[in-house]
Length: 413
Image (tube, rainbow, N blue to C red; front, side, top):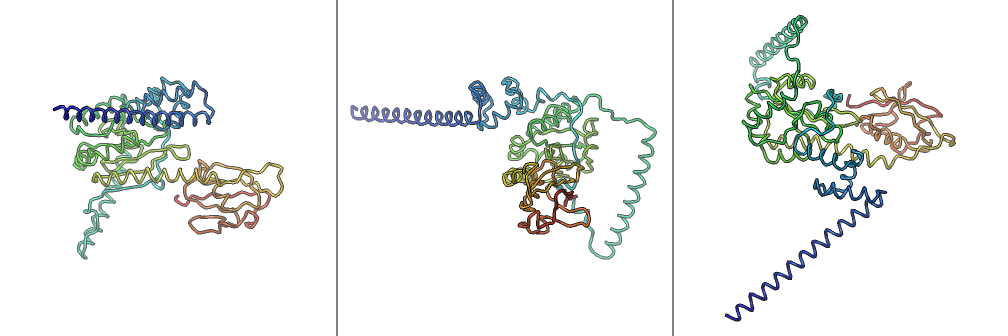
């Protein structure tokens, strides 16, 4: 018995020493992280008061990246209370304290700029056989004529009647749909509890993606989509981590209005809205029902593609040579005309390469993602990634003189 007692005491002593050692290691790790973060903030020129606020914000929100904490506080003019409340609101799907604007920012809806995913049924494909092809052709001609005539008739009738779906209380439309959805489908992403305008304003301000879902109760595909794809744990985790999720039923005035603004034709439908060129654009469009795995792949494709372009622009910005002084010899002044109508003027040394000129335009916020640079008349393509132009040619080799006007042509338009 005495021997067993000594063994137990020794084991207890070992466990106690091990626990203390583990606590010591954890404390050293936390202290090192604290000092590393503190040194980084000191290098960035933050005052002691601002560094304290960054650490307090980090404790409240659980955001590990100190740079992110600093950026959020900077956007809110170093108002700690407002910054914390803003993050908690967005995390819980509530509008931020600033999302009070009634008019949303303009959203560019250009299918050339979008990833379009469609889950059309196989019944739409042409049947095989000569008789089947004739029948398919006649049905399509009849369908086209019917849709054209009905559209003209509806447009004519709309001239003599008022809009029956005037949006009077968009917030109530959204909250009512959320209540109905939660009752029918208990497992779902975090809903944004605000209007479409508020969601757009918050997404733009916080530089987050906005995932818009429009529901049609009468569609069997919508029920399948909500029960399977939108209830999947991996899909929910991805949406909650990367996006604001706004949803509404097209039977309500708010949902009906949004469906027209995004040109929705098939339900269920999802669109991903994000920032590019300092503007909100629809980056992805997902039409029809699909599996959870396919939905996750589609969302990841849209997000990853946009992040890759943004990362590439950041990397290329460091490769663009500095602009020479106005009185520097051997320079060329270039005026670029962009597809958006914007004009950019910039000086280059004639020894700079045409690739340097291309990189400068690519890194500009108003630049398209794929483009070529051409002269006006006679038209010459100076640089195009798609056509494999010589990247070693200099501005002088291209024959550009003291002042030139060049055109940036969008290859995706």
